Length: 101
Image 1 (tube, helix red, strand yellow):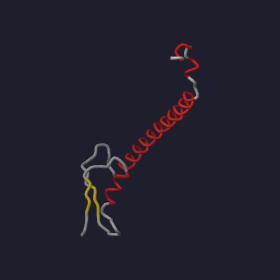
Image 2: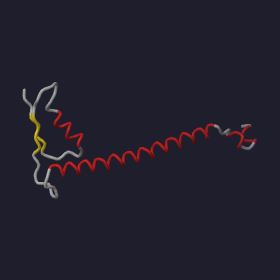
Image 3: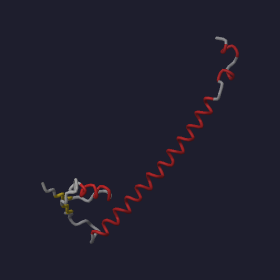
């Protein structure tokens, strides 16, 4: 069975593009793929479109990496906070008459 994939919309990143065309070649089969795109404003070549797609994807990845660094920092901070909280003996801060109840 021969498979032919046609993309009619530009994927958001190269990985998705590669995955779409990778669908045609399973278990060593040599099938085909093709992109049919309507005129995309501002692009007169496929390579320019791909360059911009890669730049956009790179910015997206950088933004995710920055968010991840912040999340990891907050996680370490919370871990230290929890260690401090666990080390506090709250009963020593309560008046004696409350501790006796």
